[in-house]
Amino acid sequence: MELPELRDILGDIGGLGIAIIAILIGLIVHWAVYRVASRVSKETTSRIDESFLKHTRNSGRLLFVVGAIFISTIFMNEEARGFAREACIFFGIIGLGWFLVGLLRVGSEAVVARFPDEGPDDLEERQIRTQLEILVRFGTIIIWLVASAVALLTIPGVQALAASMLAGAGVMGIVLGVAAGPLIGNLIAGIQIAFTQPIKVGDVVVIEGEWGHIGEITAAYVVVHIWDKRRLIVPLSQIVNQPVENWTRKTTDLLGTVKLYLDYRAPIDEIRTAYKQILDESGLWDGEAWSILVTGADDRTITVRALYSAPDASVEWSLRCLVREQLITYLQQEHPYALPVHREIHVEGTPQLAR
Image (cartoon, rainbow, N blue to C red; front, top):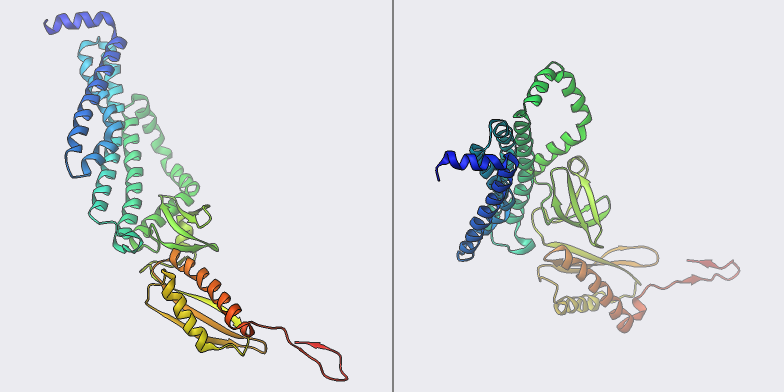
């Protein structure tokens, strides 16, 4: 069957019918291509193939459909052909932007995959991951803005409207600049965080009195995972402009302390020996540092500080609770007189005074 005859047959169906057939063909071709690609990717050792299919599947479906409709316009009449091609150009630009966003994420995952996951101690991997997350989010915003603007400009009515608005663009820019001040501030703060990195994904921090770790850094805010499973949402500008206590900026290991207020009769040397045994048997202590020191005294008690090292913040918290509990238990069982007592001094002929 020659092309003119096929065009005549399809012309009887109408532009809408041809478009529906083209959509079905595009979906079938997309399904077949990605089906074969998925099977091939499972036979390779690289995870980049799977990442590519994952992040481009939906945008690829749109592009396949748009391509099929654009090709089918040769069988449409003049009126339907013009409308269909304009629609294809519009959605093709949107699909291309969507596809580029997917490629951006594929590239990000490819870079992260080069660094083996060594847990919270892998400072370099966390630095790279933080930078990539922020840059990918900014890149996504820019790609969508450009794609949307270009797609809208393909619509004739929008072109005329854009030309008529150029005269008021200056005033509009000032108004938008004032209205979007916080958003722009967060965008600038995000770029600053990406390169200076006061915080990274996985860092243990104290923000607004809350202890937790950085779970996510978006283009506008930071999500802090609080220890009790709450989520603290903090704008990026606040991270840059206000103090943040970062426990793991350079390294994850920490020093922790437990303070005890004891009687003057407390046997420090024996407590020191028992404390070292507690650490050795804890299974949490990293063996780097420890000490028992008397760091203060008043008229009632002495202050004994038990210091220890830990590989990360979660272990430090567990070790702190264990040390406190076992030292108190040891003192109760072996040296109960070392625990603080309340003394009263009675002077004959004077009222009773509590000290």
